[in-house]
Image 1 (cartoon, protein in one colour):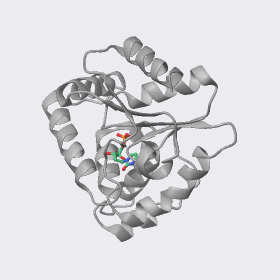
Image 2 (cartoon, protein in one colour):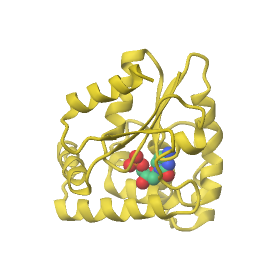
Image 3 (cartoon, rainbow, N blue to C red):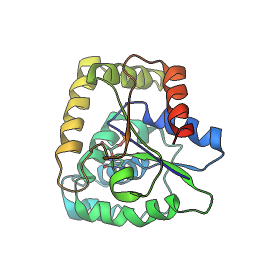
Length: 204
Ligand code: DC
C-alpha cells in the first residue's frame, strides 16, 4: 500500500502521515525535508534560492540532516518553497522519492505532489488542509516549542505567501489529486484528525 498525504504548509499532514505509517507499520518519508535540505544548503552557502544553478548545486546531498533544528525554521521553509519551484530541482529529487514510494511492502509519503506526480498510483490519497489562520497558529506554537522566537502575523503572512508560491508554480503545483479524499482539519485536534485519517485509509 502506498499512501499519499498532500496539503499546504502546516495543515497537519506530517503528523497524520506519521500516524498512518505507525498504525500500518510502514516507512514514512517527509518529502518537505528534502526541499528544506536544499533550501538550507543554498542559504548556508551564501547562494540565492531563486537561482536555479545555486539550487541545483545543493541537490547532491546524501542524507537529510534530520536532527538539525534549522531545518524546521521558517527561513528553511521559505527557501524550500523557492527552490522547489525550479523544475531541475524537482527532477533531481524525483527518483529518490519514487524509489521510497515503491519499496516492497509500501510506504507513506507526505508533501505537495505525492498523489499527482511522485506516486499517482497511490491508494489512498489524502489531501489535508485547514484555514490559513489555523495553520499559522499551529506553526507559531510549534516554533515556540522549538525555542525559535517569532511573531504570529509574520507566520501568517509567510503561510499565505507559501500557499501562493506552492500552488501557483508551473512545476508540480500544490493541487488536490482528483482521486484524493479531502480532510479539513480546521476544527479538529490532533487526535480527531488522526482518527479521521485512519478511517479514510481503512475504508480505501
Ligand atoms: O511541507 P514543508 O513545509 O516542509 O515543505 C517545505 C516546502 O517544500 C514547501 O513550501 C514546498 C516544497 N515542497 C514541494 O514543493 N513538494 C513536496 N512534495 C514537498 C515540499
